[in-house]
Image 1 (cartoon, helix red, strand yellow):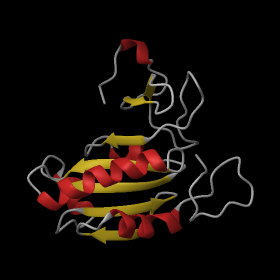
Image 2: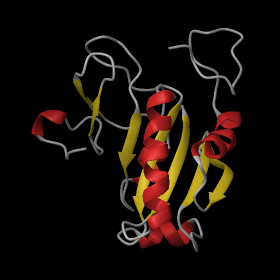
Image 3: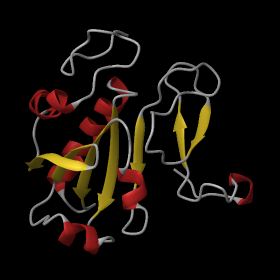
Image 4: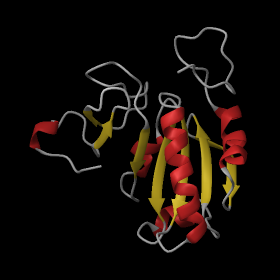
Length: 169
């Protein structure tokens, strides 16, 4: 992720993330959006949406159409370092349906207080801006996915798909 530049435009301020397409490898400049999910500008593939937020950027990053998992973590925390790569994998596997927002609680203590993160890692599952599940502690990938999948919205363009099923590759 990188910061914005003058060409980003003043019409929609906010942080800019650089997301890499899994299919074609293109780098895509993405701003937070409360509608839709990011797709590659080159090939149209849904992009894995994993960003870092601060006390100042969190509210705009957390407003997203897909389900949002907020990872309240710290770099010195061993269990946090275990969970981080799992969340990255899930953001790739559930591209277009999941946004992962990472918040370093050492650097963003207001958010840690706001969400009562007394132990880390704490993961907040948010749907339409509301916390629908709270996961405290490190879980293996199957257990973490089992907690997140029921809160996902159905994949777009696949009528009849249920929230707990992953999109076909």
